[in-house]
Amino acid sequence: MKLKPLALALAMAGLSQHSLAAQDEHTYANLDEVVSTHLFLDLDVDFADKQLEGFVEHSLEWKEDSARTLVLDTRDLEIDRVIYEDSQGKWYKADFTLAPRNDVKGAKLTIRFAQQAPKVRIYYNSLPQASGLQWLTPEQTASKTQPFMYSQSQAIHARSWIPVQDTPAMRVTYSARIETPENVRAVMSADNTGAFIKDGDYFFDMPQAIPPYLIAIGAGNLEYKEMSHQTAIFAEPQILDASVAEFNDTQAMIDKTEGMYGEYAWGRYDLLMLPPSFPFGGMENPRLSFITPTVVAGDKSLVNLIAHELAHSWSGNLVTNATWEDLWLNEGFTSYVENRIMEEVFGRERAVMEQALDSAGLRAQLKTIDAPDTRLNLKLNGRDPDDAFSSVPYTKGQLFLIYLEQQFGRDTFDTFVKQYFSDHAFQSVTTDEFVAYLDKHLLKAHPGVVSLEKAKEWIYQPGLPADAPNPTSDVFDKVDAQTTAWLAGDKQLSALPTANWTVHEWLHFLNNLPRDLNNDKMAELDAQFNLTASTNKEVAFAWFMLAVGNGYEAIYPALDQHLSSIGRRKLIVPLYKALIANGKRDWAYDVYQGARPGYHPLAQGTIDALFK
Image (cartoon, rainbow, N blue to C red; front, top):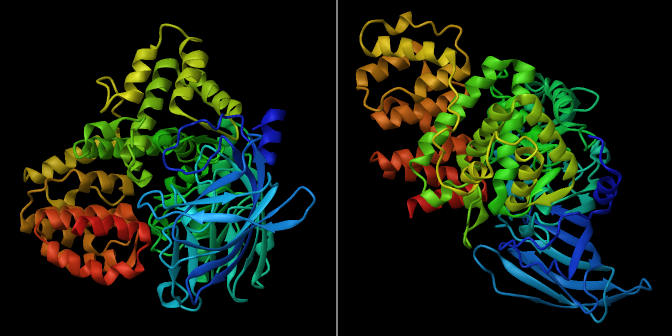
């Protein structure tokens, strides 16, 4: 998008027009007194000790003349020493205090200066249990030759590998020098041209200001292959070509999104394929989205994940939630834009099927979530911000925007969304600020269509409004008719027209089968469609959930392999819950004990809680 001159200058300088007064309860940072505007990282990737070791240098902008203290967020970091630079370029030792560790926020690092310092340098190392890093042995990777390390900084895990003002209310540019073993390539959420030559010594620069949760690093036996002039894949050799074939529509996605919402502001858009232990589908780290290999299905059936991470380049990375209670501003907008991208590239029918699947998933999950947590503007009340992640910010947020699109018309709503991205580029926004902007630029600009009270009902009230969109697909209606005929005994399973079903039809079919099918019918399904051996991870997950719910024992060897070979929380956590709920706790616990060392710390924490 064509950024306004002020916004562009702020983006390059690491500043934000947004007031840093947003009350983020998950940071210790004293943003009202001093703000870090640029980081320089000099780190060694130590696979033997499972740690990053070196220093971070903060460039500081002081907000208060009397301030002499910098407060940073840390978690499970060892701080060796701190030095600061004076206005003459001389360096001095700084006094610092590392407070006791809080279970959610980590440990407050307070640094005291004799004078206001333009720069401060903290020498430190991460610990092996850092919640934002995973260390994998060569045996746990696809290539089996080199170890692998990667970060996951969202929501507040950047502090586990960098002492930083870890809040999305601020933005910072960064540069880095990363040292690795010579045969290991490092990459970051930055300009990765310094990583093209594999030599163990890598330099990176991120000239646009980003919130700290988007600082990311990966290192392993990575090769590189371009898909277009603007896109490429970093991956282990074993999955590189398959990933390129799966995701070679990425450039078309960029081009279509620019046509709808303005220029892509980040230069390149590359993908890093991670090991199967990655706990998420993807992470929108700017310039280099991190992607799970579980979406490499061989038929492009799951590439909406790429559309989602790309959409974050506008909603989330460019315009960011100011606190984690405003997460829906990132994920609701991104889910909406994702679906619009899918419609533009793959057609309306597929886009509507994906809307319907997500809507059905949300409505099912709403029955299991406490009412206060079904509000878009969530109140965490001191809880870990990882608790904010559910279908609510994603799909309820998307349905709210679909509702606005339906009420105002697509052309009017597209104009509003594009202007919202442009007016808030490289800024962090609270829900209240968004409501004020919505009221001024859409509701009052087109009076009598949607009231402010209706918008507030969507945002501040639990559940879904009575007139919420409920997307349906004619394709799914046909699947339902076939399912009903089989269940009634009017049609043989072999007569169902499944040969040309898409993954979306299979998921709808499996997700809507009864949870009281007898063993004979389950065996008939398995024999006819070979579901237990499905290589599509989403289809396998849906089948396993159905089978666990119906007590179909034949799946258990394959389910063991599924749970032991991937760490994506979406595809494993509900299965552990279902196993526990259906009398298979001991079996599930035994599987988990074997699988746990290969899971990311975030997945470990979630599943540990299930067995307590």
